[in-house]
Length: 287
Picture 1: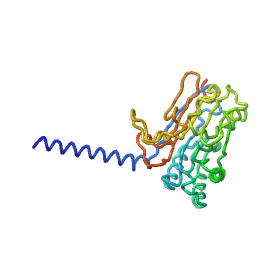
Picture 2: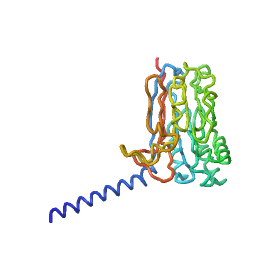
Picture 3: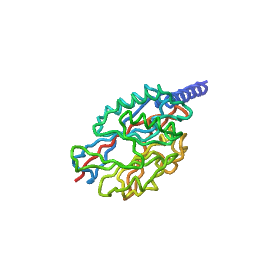
Picture 4: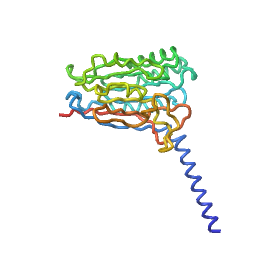
């Protein structure tokens, strides 16, 4: 009798654990959002940009699982940082060729994005879903421009803060998937003595770039797998994130590659051990 009672209790506890894990993966985590804070120090960061703060967010995947309420939460979280610069790393809508972007949806998201505040500018690149069709890429670019984002495709932009002679360099590559990344064009005129920040949607392009010309590389695309279980791996591992998948990668004399889990979800509205996040980098001038 005691053995039977123990078995029933054990079965009950296992059932509770499974129920909690499912609740966490399908309800709690997809609706949660974290701020991940990072710091990078370098003598190449000018004194006038000491404590310069950059917010990165990626893979919003609006118009499917990411609702207006979730997007508003992300925007409020971004604004809570008080960043100098905000950068979007691509995939604004979720499969726009299947989930139609109506004029109402486009206006809704453009108005939301216009709420994002940044003292020294807002910048964006396009991801693979943004290139699913020519019409989609045009609508997405229009929405970003309406919201005062500067969309950079295979180019660079100097970032200043109070001193016109001191800056860091922002370099942007077009999407590795469906886009047309032009590395020589993006790196034209780039000086290794300047602090150079590269943004790209798909992290696997990291092996194609000259990392001696970069100090930090930020990418998205992989969602951190959405569901990540060590040894078993992940639910979501797309082309463009097969070599470099989640977290940070770096070796001696190479730029740090940091891959964000992104904000939204795709295919299934689920997350486990891959929290939705917004990444905040603080730049520190090092003597």
